[in-house]
Length: 96
Image 1 (tube, rainbow, N blue to C red):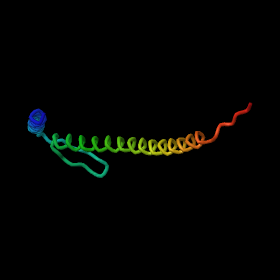
Image 2 (image 1 turned 135 degrees about the horizontal axis):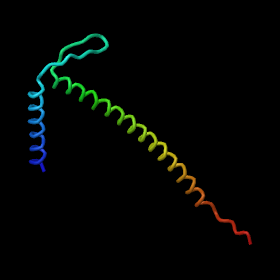
Image 3 (image 1 turned 180 degrees about the horizontal axis):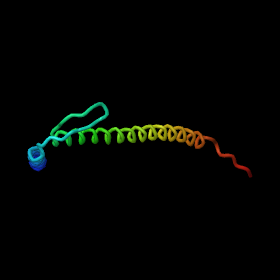
Image 4 (image 1 turned 30 degrees about the horizontal axis):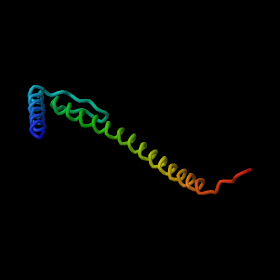
């Protein structure tokens, strides 16, 4: 398994290097406060990192929401379990 993951990582690194060499041309980037010239491969890398970070943030928001909901539900289960234990401990009245 380790050989496969190492080979896959090496293959991805080679593809990234070849991609960067093939896209070495510069492009003009215009943004709110000015403009600059960047190599296309660097610009794509920056956009990739920003997109991955944005996706990670939205995923963390959902994860934290689910954890809070799980915590609240576990608290409710404990309360209901105590109530059920108390009801089971009560003597049963016989109405004959």
